[in-house]
Amino acid sequence: MPQFKIAIVGAGPAGYFTAQALQNSQTEDLTFQVDMIERLPTPWGLVRSGVAPDHPKIKTVAKVFEKVAAELNFNLYANVELGTDITIEELKDRYDAVVMCTGSQIGKKLGIPGEDLSNSISAADFVPWYNGHPDYENFQVDLSGKVAAVIGAGNVSMDCARMLAIEASELDETDTADYALAKLHSSEIKKVYVLARRGAEFAAFTAPELRELPKLEHTDVYINPDAIDLAQTRAERAGEVEKHVASNLEAMRLVAESQKSGNEKSMEFLFEHVPLEITGREKVEGIIVKTPDGEKTIPCDLVITAIGYESLPIAGIPFEKGRIKNEDGRVVATNIYTVGWAKRGPSGVIGTNKSDAADVVKLLIEDLKTPKSTSDIRELLKPDHEIVDQAFWTRINAAEVKAGEEHGKPRVKATSIAKLMSLGRG
Ligand code: NAP
Image (cartoon, rainbow, N blue to C red; front, side, top):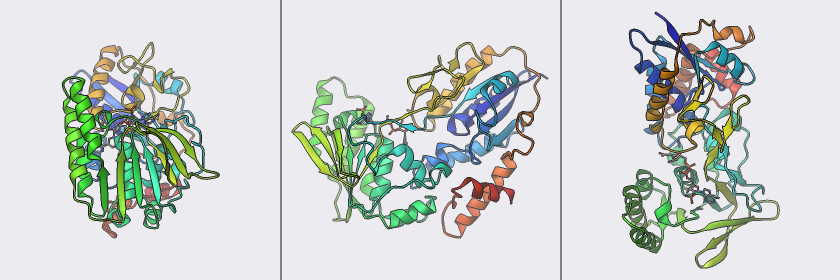
C-alpha cells in the first residue's frame, strides 16, 4: 500500500495535532509516515516552555501528544535543527508534504523610548526563563526592586504578573525551573501593575484566568470597579455586548469585589494606560503612561512587555506580517503547509490548534498525488549526529519525572542541552 511521507517541523501543540489529524485521516488506501523534526532535545513546545507552571492541568494535554507519538507511523527526530542540520529544500524534495509548526517566538516591541534600558524585558524571554527553556538558562532579570509593570492585557501578561505576584512557595511543587524558583524566592517585588492600553471591554484576558485571581492565597488583586462600570456602559452603548466581553467584565467584577487580606504582595490592573516612555538612567526607574486624566509616571523597577509575538523568518519560506505567508495553511506553489501560530499569528489557546490542524490536513490530503519514494531522514544528517528519538526522549522524560517525585513536583526540568542529552543517554 502506498504511504505518503509527511515532515512536521516543530514539536509543539500545532505539530502534535497535525500528526494526530494525519493519523485520524488514514484509510485502507491512504496511510502516512509522520516524521516530526524539533530543534530542542525536548518536544511539547509551549506546553513545556510556555504554559505557566502554576497551571499544571493545561499541561495534561501532553498525554495526548505522547499517545500520538506511540503510533507506529510516528517518528521523533529531536535535536535536529532546520537550517543547520537539514535544509528546507531537502525536506521539500524528500517528503510529500512539509508542515511548518514553528510557532512565534519573538516578542513584539513597543517602539517607545527607554525600551532598551536594563530590566525592561520581553515576556518572550521571561516566560521561557521561568520555564527552563535551555536558550534562557543565563537570561538575567533583576527582581531586587519593589514594583513591576507588565504591559499588555492578554493571558501572557497575566501569567507574567501572576508569577511575580504570587508567593514563591506556591511554586515549590511546580515544574518552575530550579534557578527561576530560587530567584523568585529571593524576589523583593511586592506590587505588580498590569497596564492595558484600552478599556476593560477590549481586554484579551479570558474569563477563567481572571476568575482564578481572587483565589490567590497570598496576593491581593485590585481592579477599580469604576473602570469596569465605564467599560460596561461603553460596551452597551456600542451595541449588543459580546458573550466573551460580558463574561470577562463579570469575572473582573469578581476580582474587584474580592476580599483583600492585606497581603504584602498585590497585583493591580490599570486600564486606559498607554505606555509612552520607560524612564531611568541605566536601569528601569519608571514608566510614563497616558491616561484619560493626563500623563503620569508610575515608578517601577522592572518592565515586562507582553504585547504579542512574531515568528522568526525561515530561509526559503515566504514571510508576511510576522508569520509564514500562506493561504488557509497552504504555502502557495510549494508542498509546504503551516499550522498554529506560524500560520495564523499568536492567537488562540492550545486546543485551537486541533481544529486548525484538521483543516490544513484536509487541504494537504486534497493536494497529494503519488507518494515519493524517499529514503531515511538520517541519511541527511552527519553520521555522528545524535538524534533524540522517542526512546531517547522517553528516558529524559522519565528521569525528570523521577527527580520531581523526590520533591513533590511533576518533574525537575533539566535546563541545559548538555544535561538533557546526558539524561537521555541514560
Ligand atoms: P494577546 O491575547 O493578543 O494580548 C496582547 C495584548 O497586548 C492585548 O491586550 C493588546 O492590546 C496588547 N498590546 C498590543 N500592542 C500593544 C502596545 N503597543 N501597547 C500596549 N499594549 C499592546 O496575546 P498574548 O497575551 O501574547 O497571548 C497569545 C495567545 O495565547 C492568546 O490567544 C492567549 O489567550 C493565549 N494564552 C492563553 C493562556 C491560557 O489559556 N491560560 C495563557 C497564555 C496565553 P490591544 O487589544 O489594545 O491591541
